[in-house]
Image (cartoon, rainbow, N blue to C red; front, side, top):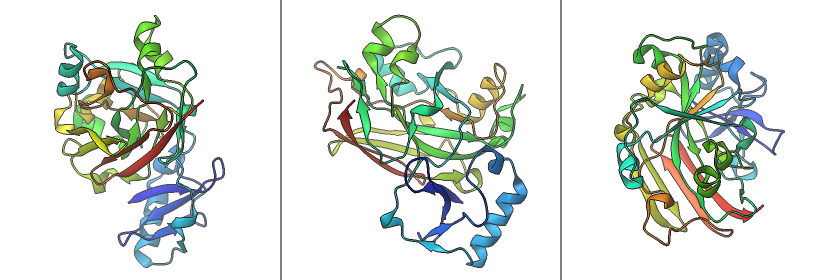
Length: 285
């Protein structure tokens, strides 16, 4: 299933995109798309049955903003340097264990919402990423297969980053990762059964119409199941938590000088095969 949330910011309602591309209203069936729903197999079954029956009311998607596909996210765990080609382009050694940092849940915006270039920023960068949404409480998982079994679905994430704040200002990466609007998510949460193999997905990103990233999750150093297993050794993952699993080569940081960092007026578009497409215009904060 392709689950999403539509409406003005803070007032989104749950919806489903059916196999014919028609937007269907779920608000009479479930309260929202959040961790509680994703952990409730019976409720998900009711959605599938209603979708198959054709009883869900159609919505006019042209008139509705698409919000983040998951509400009330508890935490966003991010994996750094998780693609072989991205490590090579930045001159970094592939990590022996996953690099973990966090983004605050309030960085999340809709897939087509405006992204703000922080005040004083000269190194705002792009990163297309596969987002993993947890569907079952995960703690001390024993295998990568068990990790995959705890995934509810997948979405497109844009891990916008300010490299000066991240790398040159001391401390951890978090200063360059948690600026306002720095995690567009969506348009859909695609359930794991529909995605199939998460290591066989194409990722692409364009800046002002120019292709910058063109990669595949097959390049991941630590695949999705292993990432979920590994993270569960250090913290409990709850339904509705999100893991951003890293970015392939092609970011501004990896380009020769002068590096083409983002500025107000730039337009970024990104997509992952089968998971949908995002478009953001950048403006000054």
